[in-house]
Length: 80
Image (cartoon, rainbow, N blue to C red):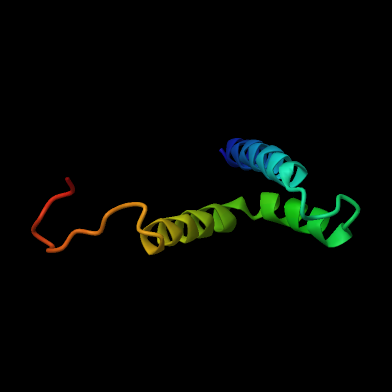
């Protein structure tokens, strides 16, 4: 059971690492020789169980802050 959990953790870490690497590589504002950026990509992929929920919360807040999604006027009204 413990080996399966470790395997799942490592597989998700690999997927997160590949995703972060793709985003980092597509970013033209950060030099690819910056060691701190590479370190953050590696650390972020290994602590994915913290970084993914925080990223989802941040993206949700940005959506509501920019009014991309309409805010309901009253709590009992539904989204139209």
